[in-house]
Structures are given as structure tokens and as C-alpha cells.
Amino acid sequence: REEKLTCQGCGVTIQTEDKEKPGFVPQSALENEEIICQRCFRLKHYNEVQDVGYSDGDFLKMISQIADTKSLVVKIVDVFDFNGSFIKSLHRLTGNNPIILVGNKIDLLPKSTNLNRLKQWMKKSAKDYGLTVKDVFLVSSKTGKGFDEVKANMNAYRQGKDVYVVGCTNVGKSTFINYLINESTGTKEAITTSYFPGTTLGFIDIPLDNHASLYDTPGVINRQQLTHYLSKQDIKTITPTKEIKPRVYQINDKQTLFVGGLIRIDFIKGERQPFVLHFANALDIHRTKLEKADQLYVDHLGGMLQPPSESSKAEYPPLQERTFKISGEKTDIVLPGLGWITLSGEPVTITVSSPSDVPVSVRPAII
Ligand code: GDP
Image (tube, rainbow, N blue to C red; front, side, top):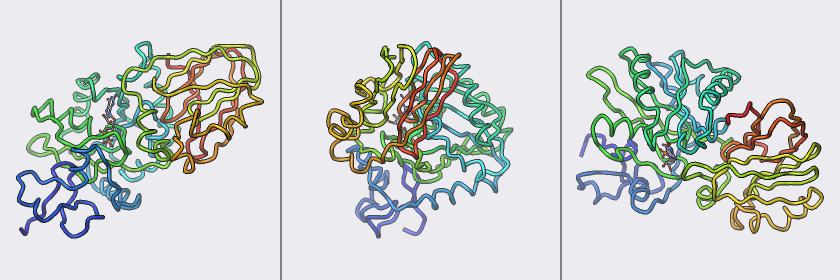
């Protein structure tokens, strides 16, 4: 065959030469009606992901083509991992095109979440990173919540032009696009989705009308994502699968909380007070005395304190401390990729330890 074949799962160009490179299919599979690459095949049938040879540079080069277009950019972030999924370099790659920001996965937030405050915080954080967005929307690609609003606004903002959907791996970009396609055509699971980072590989062209298309772009891998340092099993543990249930711990001065073995919170100074934890229900929390915490971490990382599991703890980066003094307002300590802890505003000094590439931040409480 002469014409260029593309994978119906991820859009990558099909090749039969090199098993280790993107787009591989065995020669015999070219006869199949639906051609999907080996990677998508495995994903579909075994939920397994193979690493393929795209470097970060290749991804960014592909994305930077958007700068030469006249289009609307829809940037998707994970509301559970705003900082980790933001990709600060992205707007330099997309030129002067208008951008709307979409926070996905709101079905995982507790019912009592104040979505307006979450939006305000996202808008402000984007601005602090140097990105002015036209608008912020919150959706669930799982339940469809927020889609009517986002669709109407996408149409208004694009003014007949193409739409590029960008985002880093695992924010739910494929699921978001699938939802849009499914609603307009009734096709289910049009694009491959999975649990694990790095699933979408090519630019996928989805016609919007006779003159314009919506393009799915490759998911950029971001080193600031916690998932980057974890095994598949660990990622399953930290990823919420349903609405998270807040867990309340009354914490005293000189106590330490371990969130699995991933992050450590030391209560340095202040009156006894509630720490309201918002993490995946499957993630274990351990409380100990501050004076015992160092030794506990050494002795039990990968065992009682996991994730990271025994087999992946060697790759988990050392923790770096940051101290926060909080008083006055109800405040969230945001642990990117994991969730957040709400503090009442009663004066407190805490030290939070996380991998240096995965910095912890604070925001006005969203609940
Ligand atoms: P991509 O790498 O950005 O294309 O992300 P995917 O679409 O493959 O989604 C990554 C993971 O997040 C998958 O396990 C999805 O099922 C899950 N996911 C995507 N959207 C949502 C959502 O709105 N809510 C929830 N709870 N999970 C979602």
C-alpha cells in the first residue's frame, strides 16, 4: 500500500519495520479492517502501556505547530493536579491564539466544593504563570457535567476557526474528546483512553463543520507530575475512582502525618486542630510523633508507608521540606496529583516534605 496509514486509536503513522518505535503493527495486521498500532492494541486488550520513543522535545515540536495556525486553544488540566498538569511552556508554543482553560474530573470533588472558588483560583494561578485565559470551565468527562456550557463557549470563542485541544498526559484529554464525539455522532470510545500517562500520540482530526476541525494533540509528559515517579500499581492507589470522602484528623503540636510514603506533613507549632484530608479513599494515612518520623520513614517506606511500593521506592526522589505559616483564613495545602488538606485558619506552622519537582502550594480553601 502506498498511502499513509494512521492508527485508528491514537492517530500515529503506521509502520511495520520497528517494534520499538511508535505506530508498529505486524505486516499481517495490515489486512484488518480496523488498523490500530501495537501499543493501542495492548492498551485496549490488556490495559498495558508500552513506552515508545517520543522524547519531550518531539512532543513540544509537534505542539509548537499550533503557533502558525489561527485557532482556539482548549487547554485541559486535571483539577486534582492543577500545578502538575499545567505545563508552563505551553502558551509560548501556541502563539497568540485565544485560550480557554478546562478543569476536568470534577466528579471526584466532594459535593460541598465551591466550584466558583476553584475557578477563581485556577484563573489566578494561570495568570501567575503568565497565561491570560479567556475563560475557565469545569467539567467531568465521565459524567458530562459542564459540557453544555463548555460546548456553547467553544463555539462562540472559535468564531468558525479550528480548535486544538492540548494538555499533558493523563488529564483526561482523550476522554474529553470522546465525550464530545460521542454526543455528536454516537460513537463510543473513539479514541483510546487509559489510566496511565502518555496514551495519545498523534494529531487526530475531528471535523466540526465543513470548514473547521477539532484536533487532538499529543499529551505532553510533565516532570512535575507525581505519577511520573510511580509504578502503575501505585498510580492506581493514588488516583481517585469516585467522589473523595474528606477524612478528619485532630492533630497536635509535634505530630507528623504521612500520606502513604509520598508526602510528609509535620505540625511544628500551634493549637490542636482538625486537618481535613482530601485524597483518594484508597490512600493510607499514618500518624506518628514528630520525633519518631525520620526513623519510621527509613524503616517502613515501601511497606507500611506506601505507595511507593517496595519495588518502586528506589526510584522515588528524596523529600524536600517547605515550611508554611498559616493563620486567619481557611486554607488548602495543595499536594499536586494527590489532593489537598484543608486547615481551619487557626494559627499553625507546618512543614511539608515532597519531591523537589513536585512542589506543594497553598490556596484559599475551596470547601
Ligand atoms: P489523556 O492522557 O489526557 O488522554 O487522558 P485519558 O483520557 O486517557 O484519561 C486518563 C485517566 O483519567 C483515565 O483513567 C480516565 O478514565 C480518567 N478520566 C478522564 N476524565 C475523567 C473524568 O472526568 N472523571 C474521572 N473520574 N476520571 C476521568
